[in-house]
Length: 216
Ligand code: G5P
Ligand code: MG
Image 1 (cartoon, rainbow, N blue to C red):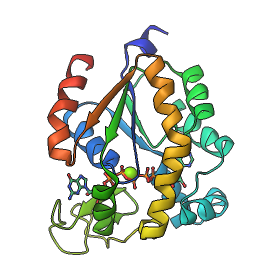
Image 2 (image 1 turned 90 degrees about the horizontal axis):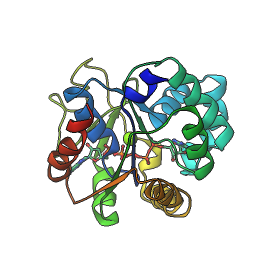
Image 3 (image 1 turned 180 degrees about the horizontal axis):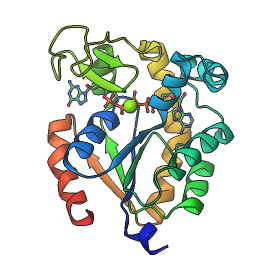
Image 4 (image 1 turned 45 degrees about the vertical axis):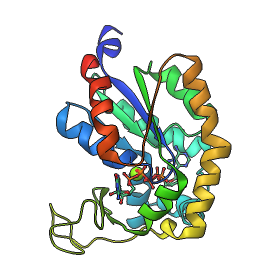
């Protein structure tokens, strides 16, 4: 119990393309924190055609949320393996039932909420390239891969996410507004929410660093 309270347990929230993965990578680089991205996990299962992957593909392809019970099973399993470690959840929780279950498993120390205008998001996702096995993301003109089309670390090919087509991005933004905004209220009421507003990651990052520093 003492160890669980001492550890850093954070959540990063934000609309699709708001920079959760990018900021998480910076946090991991600077602090001793394990990053858990629900979307990266799901895409990995889809790429490997596991039973779970086959079950969730239709939701990701259409930009709809995966059912709560599936997500809760996946993420609580993952958290169990990280006993005593600091962690940062990216993409979970996305509904109030998910947040309630998470709270019953572990008290959360901090919730980082990214607020980036939709117009900026729609521009960004057009230029996003992803390394599927690791979840590393690139953006043409912002953080280009060293070799075009290839991952910096493994040299493997990059791909574009099927859900980054404009109509699907719009659906994901709608899902965020209708289902995930209530998670923000949930954490606001508990005094855990810290909001960061801006149009670029470089502008948000120093403020996020400052907020995490005293906790780690
Ligand atoms: P995901 O995978 O959680 P989203 O939609 O929440 O997906 P996404 O798209 O992964 O979020 P992000 O991580 O917030 O976005 O953003 P990012 O990848 O870091 O940045 C976006 C792009 O902008 C990148 O190319 C990056 O390089 C670039 N970029 C960053 N900063 C800047 C900048 O300052 N300037 C510029 N020019 N570019 C920048 O969820 C996917 C699906 O999985 C399911 C759902 O179906 C969901 O649709 N799912 C769940 N369903 C139910 N419950 C859950 N808990 C679920 N979790 C996942
Ligand atoms: Mg992401």
